Length: 438
Image 1 (cartoon, rainbow, N blue to C red):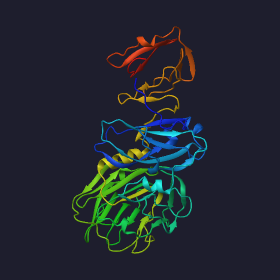
Image 2 (cartoon, one colour):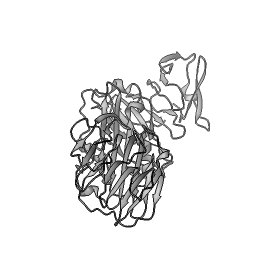
Image 3 (cartoon, rainbow, N blue to C red):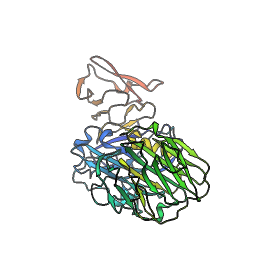
């Protein structure tokens, strides 16, 4: 039998997060993977993890490489069992089973996360990432570009229910967020992203804007002639003209969260909603033109120098991101899945002293420890928890004693890797994926 290592036995617990990359069409290098611990972590995680999450470590699937130096926590609250984990990791193309381990349960540990590890979560292509979860003061840029907000006017800052953790709610009449001018946000080619939730999809409102005789913006019902009426539009300027990629607002609902993104690669402007391309424009050509060194405005129209030029957004905004190149359709599709909580599945809690490996085919549990060690694991397909300790077969949280002694040396595996091992009241238990004999 093959035996997988336990990264560090001073961490008493772990669970595996299996990345749902079955439909990823290309390798996503240094991707910021999102894990919603509130909905994904096994229930006992919140019992065994440190109060402040200081004992959390992210270990790659080789059970050796520590990814914690390129990760951070957002919205941690053990009392309410909430928290979001972000970790930079390349995601392989479809057909490759991949996972990361979340280790925890070390008393007195100090946190592995800092401003530096937060910045390391995002590759160099990200020029600004704003979680919008700060409940007062500036909204901080999670990248190392220091594009923190300046002047803000926000109805509810950071504590509104967001697409991921907290969000900002804007009143639609005079609220906005200002990101002061920085050349890193004035890219020749670009990807700009936002999660939005509008109270009125029919009004002319800015999700974000860095225009004024140039630049780019994301808007509902723009009065600009390049954007058709009653559409969600992404706009850019390459010379003296605006170009738009559009999608009818009739496809949207009020008071509903949507992920939107726009990419421009020098030839094609593409609008995405919820990870899917919804509109394209192949008319523009060349680099985006910028006339003024003006700010990036979130939730309002920009002027030559400020974010008070009207078209104030009414509703909530979250997770704003700017990259200085056009990200691929595969990247944006998986980014939506990761943000929305469908980027992977978590296994059950495991504890030091045994190991369990999930196979690619079916994600069945494979026992990889000493047969006399107490083992517990649930499979995604619904197989009960399995444990072996001397002559006891443990299912879920109760014990069923064997009615006869087991001859381990006689165990063999059929061509499907399945062997019916144990008899217990109510029927037989089969463990898929057993390899070898013991």
